Image (cartoon, rainbow, N blue to C red; front, side, top):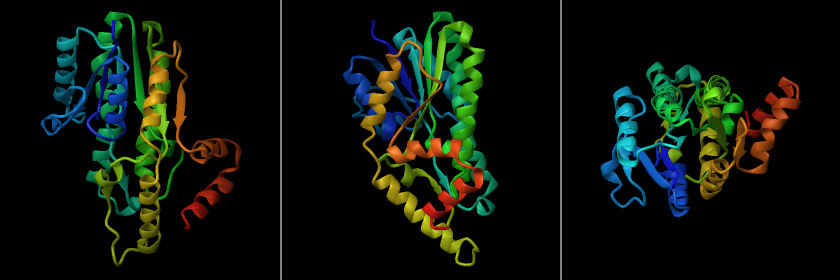
Length: 267
């Protein structure tokens, strides 16, 4: 029987690449979007879901069960970026980011757990970020939301271990997607004390995304995880130095690592 897979944020970027790849592998794939009508040419069905709205989440999961009869894999991929000096970011934008990147995945997990528990089987893959392993300058809120999801997964794994439901994190580095166009950018203010440093860092971040790896690499990594009997707690996918930066943070003194980051961002 073909496994049934639900990918939040499956209409573009990493989610779309993963969905296309898994569809070609013979899986029954459903993606989600707040505006599914925009994607009539998708290679797999796109259903309506807004992860910030509980009713929308429960309705979407119920729709998958109605159509497919079961749900084997959830890929929590929906997420948004945010950049800016933390001091200058509006509270409302900080809250929006956590609603999508942290509370959203929790809502979807809560919606699918009863289904998977009844099936006595399931896999939940949370797409986080290598940025979630470190507090990056002018990306601090994004780092915090993805880091929180990493830690949440660690706790969740232990709580659901008796139900034959697996959960794991996949932390991508920079990939060539449209995330830069969709993220909230705090404006570079003329009278801001952060004007030069933030402006330079913003250009560097956008360059990293534009020169990022092919999202197909994420699709292949997730396909491998789906076919792993006992997934690890954490996976990292991306350039060698991006993955190695996590190792360096673990072994270097805090201030030495901080200096490396500041040199990288020319701060």
